[in-house]
Image (cartoon, rainbow, N blue to C red; front, top):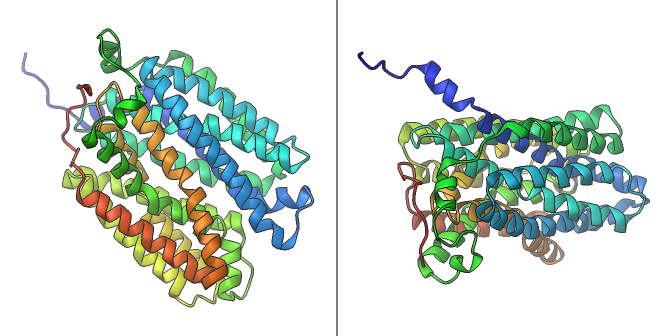
Length: 414
């Protein structure tokens, strides 16, 4: 019998297998919760008695609690994913952040709000890394970029969904919706199968999920730091420029106040198109590094427009938010590179901790921004932080290995 050539249908059947679908839907719920706080920050804080100038520092404090939880959770889930399997993370993380989400809708004090944002952060930390690791291992290397693009795109749609749910319902109900979606997805995960690559490594006598292996070898440590630095510009834009867009709009003297939820929704609408474009361009050019470099530079251009463009019209401001979102669309490639740069026995650890360390970098970045704000003003302080993150990302990318054609069936050794 003459072998039949691969068809578009066979490609679709590979991309739409259950692990990919479940990982994508999981990241949708993950991003819903992660950015719901950005959308409901002001109304939820006002409901708890915070007003006026205190909205910014209290909002930053709660965001930092969430990010601290993600840092701790990233380490825990990453190690667990390499020691016990990718599925253990997919089940545990979604259960924790679903219950925490529901509890967030019941808060009646700032300390309780902070504690529950921390717990939610711990749960959220495992979803993306475990999902991307599973997808990269179950798909052939020629199409795994498409798979991670699907995951990232669905995640961005979750952020957009957060805006519309928060617009239709009170902030407490919006948290209940996120928790309910997570619990429903938990049921769907019962039939997901483990990565065969991991199953093989599990039978071998090799260290798995050993954090010290990231630090006891200079080459591995350098690769790890490079991965983190490449993602910094994304979270500078999301964690500072978009999350605190009302304060930036005020500093610019816009003709109308900026609605934070709308800015978040528009930025992530743009990121949907950016994620799709970066994934397709990566497949076309057969390169992760070149495409990411292009997106980082485009992001810098729109950061300069945002901060130095003397924007006075609210609609123009929102348009720039969309364009910033498009330029942020290399998130999927960034996490894919993190998974591809390391062996199977450390892959989940790296792919889970790296995006969470990038998210957690919001803590020093916002601290640096707030310090500079007192010295140089809101716009100039943000400009300095933005230039720093871009420079670090480009330097790290310049020395990074190209991973597009890399075979993932290997392990890291001492």
